[in-house]
Structure formats: C-alpha cells, structure tokens
Amino acid sequence: MAGGRVAISDDTIKPRPLVAAVGGSFDADSETGATVGRGFMVEVCTTVTEARVLDGYRLELAFSDGVREAVDLSPRILGSGGVFRALEDPEFFRQVRVDPQLGTIVWPNEADFCPELLRRWALGEPVPTAERERVERPTGGDG
Image (cartoon, rainbow, N blue to C red; front, side):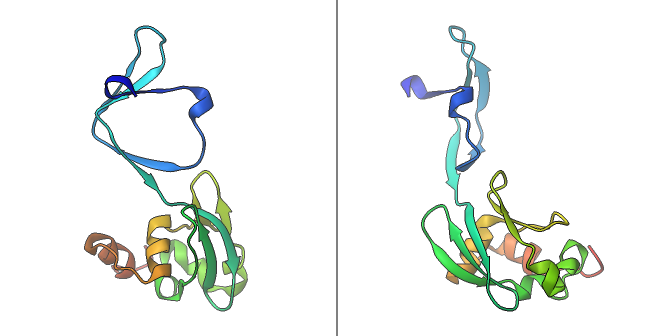
C-alpha cells in the first residue's frame, strides 16, 4: 500500500468480507485507470455464513470470524409488527436463509437483521444505545 493508496480491480472485489468505509474519496489512478481510495478508515464487518433453525424462534448461526452460537430472535420478532409480523408464523420463520451478498439471514419477504447485532445478541454482548433503541423498542404501529 504505497502512499496510503489502495487500488481496486475487478478480481479483488468479492462478496465477503463486507467492509465499512468512513471518510476519504475515490479517484482514478492516472497511470492504470484503476479506482483508488484515499483516506479511508476501513473496518471488516462480521457476516453470517450459516444458519440452522432450532426450536421456537432460535437459530444457530455461524459467523465469518469463527463464532458459532444460538440466538433467540423472539424478543425482536414477536409483537414488532411491520416486516417482522410474517416471521411470527413458525412455518414462515423456518424459511430463513443466508444471503451471501448481504452477509446475513433473510426471509422471503426481505426481512433481515444486521449481522453485527445478531452476533452481539448471540454472545450476550451489550448493544450500543442508538441501535438498542431502534431495534428493541419498536415505536408501535405496523412499521
């Protein structure tokens, strides 16, 4: 990585790992024409790689960092309304799958959960306040 520049070419773009880039800019390299990022802070995001339905609203999830744990989604689904209402049906809930492009679990109605939140819930780790209020305290209504 010369001079803080990162060249991105088609053969280096893969669906995993997902990254979050904050700040910086993209420019075309004058010699190669490749897209070059400057001044970015890049953080690799944990993704879901496997999901297995257990009992109730519990899933066993495997994450890209090697963590494999069960997570109970009932507090996030039951009574939440909106797109999560369909997940209250056990048959529909069991239709969960991993979307490799999103790096998380999804259902046929496009409901999904942030993979980092899933990992925190599975490990019993605290969730940052803004995320906790948005996800765990629905504002009421049907979303």
